[in-house]
Image (cartoon, chains in turn brown, blue):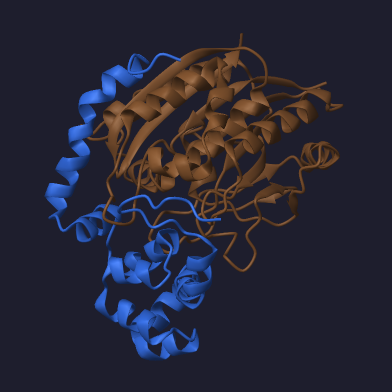
Length: 278
Length: 126
């Protein structure tokens, strides 16, 4: 049986990847963001994860609008990054955990989530930046199951559906036949908006509500429609759906181990939250 | 299903996704360095190859984010087009809000007064 050791939820802003590539972690702009990570890494490395289930959204690397799955589950043996067009460096490939992927797919479909399965899947910055943040020296020995949520083309899945999807994934992990330590990595958010006259909109109060609710009252967030989430968190703040899936995976009662919140990183309210089972 | 509009916030619905398909497809192609080179070498020919509408062609020509969005562009794909010119999301934000880049950054910075409150979870009580 596998064990879910906890969850690390973090923003995945592309500029973070640029800052890592240029070694800017201790520059005044970046320091308040990067300094939150050593305690999160200490926690993570002490928990000895074998697999990271990474819940994120693709930004036009693997998926285009020709085929846009609501929930897509990677089932590849190896995942690679590729040129995203605007200059973020690619990173080394990451090993997959296809046996766990298929266990998750079996459970999700049994629970009536009609997922898309991907035996080939490029992973973009939303998957790789959090890996860089948690394993800055490289991720040898770590395998991943990437799970992509459509937070781009409306209609988006509801927060309620995302929480339920996460719970189904969590059940699959806990019932998996191998003895693995699994960490959940959910990425994106928090509030931000890149387009329109409201570009630059941020909402610390809603972010605070999300962070507080995610600890032990994630159902509170299911009262919001996706449209309301866009209104409250900004267009791209809808990425909180990834965090809600992640919280569903973690399951029962939780304890917050690390929290950081820093405005601004790029156009975004950057956040980090580490939860472990209570 | 129509929901009440959010001021200043284009929501990328199916209507936008259909309207912007050719434009977004062209922008998506710019992931590949050889395609970025082809775009730079002959913008007209490259846009023609993807069948951009006259509105989309004009929006690309004008380098105006608001026009690109109006023509159905999605910001995640448009970012690949903007990248050709070395523009980042602060540049895009400044252009759409009519601010200078420094003013736009200052607007973002102003929200930082709440950082410690959110870190401590004391802005809301759930």
